[in-house]
Image (cartoon, rainbow, N blue to C red; front, side, top):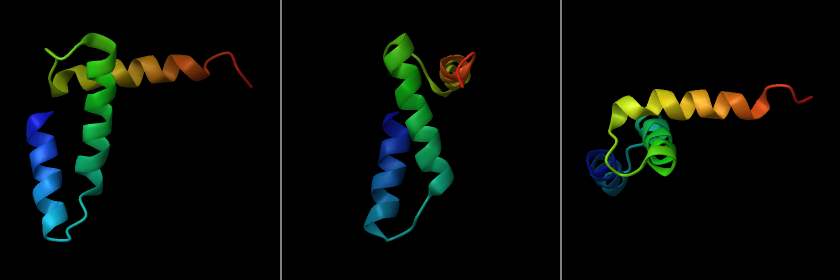
Length: 59
């Protein structure tokens, strides 16, 4: 998470949008919220799976 935040901060200082990095950081934040701060980018898949479960069975 620290690396993603540093990248986004530096890009922001230079006016460079990084949409994919922004999405990756959001997913990593969700993964950390679900599984704790010891997780890394590989935990993002679990956040995606958890998000998918929220809409199942609902119309």
